[in-house]
Image 1 (cartoon, rainbow, N blue to C red):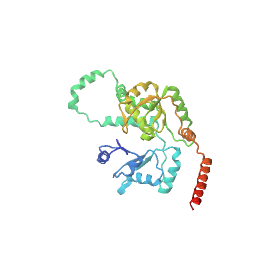
Image 2 (image 1 turned 60 degrees about the vertical axis):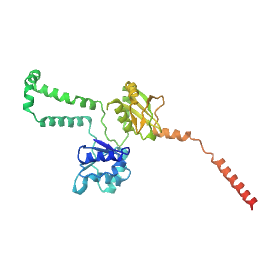
Image 3 (image 1 turned 90 degrees about the horizontal axis):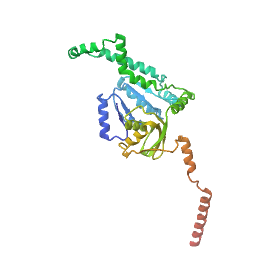
Image 4 (image 1 turned 90 degrees about the vertical axis):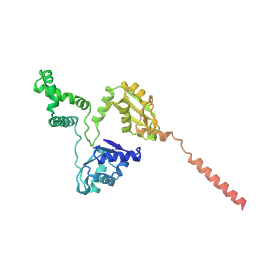
Length: 313
């Protein structure tokens, strides 16, 4: 997989698109703006992570799977807040979405497990290459039964994946209030000791929650770091993170940059605010304009101006 976005130069963009067209890469991730200019034939799937405000943009984007009589699938990953957008697209495009639940962790594990089994079945055995090693292998594994041998082999390949989904929660679409989500959020904070950190990039530097998570993953070289709430300010961002990795994160962050800005992560004593509350307080903190005095000043200036004109006349 690779991605295209506004930060790429034209040569970098052309390189990514060339590799995608010749199927060197099988998945292309694009921002909403970058996706508008794509020209690729024979796409099998278009996955919309969020819906555009304009139904025509969705139709144009997803229509790339059906060019020249070809067929394809357009997938929308949405939540209940986007139900109006879905209805609008259905009405204007004369299509009907087939609603499906997000697969559970168990469903994904099952699919991946049998994909692994199919891969094992299709492996070509080179008898000539492997035969010298087989006697020692048979002797080493002789104490295991056939069933135990299968269990050991599958577990060796699959334990990490099973462990990852064992810790994850299932996400189900719900038209009402997601109480389970709230309960999970509270229990997660109780189970983990979070600490507030501040990083010196914010809205001005084009940071988003997804990009922040990606930065943390790059710094820690892990995709399993728990991140809590994220509060993106104008020129910096405050976020919650597992306290046990704070020191290593701060130490390693200086080696990376975001859009040319050298990263600096520090412990923050500021509280994370919800976006609505922060914008409300920012509006309150702005000095009020004195419209009465301004009006009086203008009327006084007009009268003085009239007086001057009269004098000059």
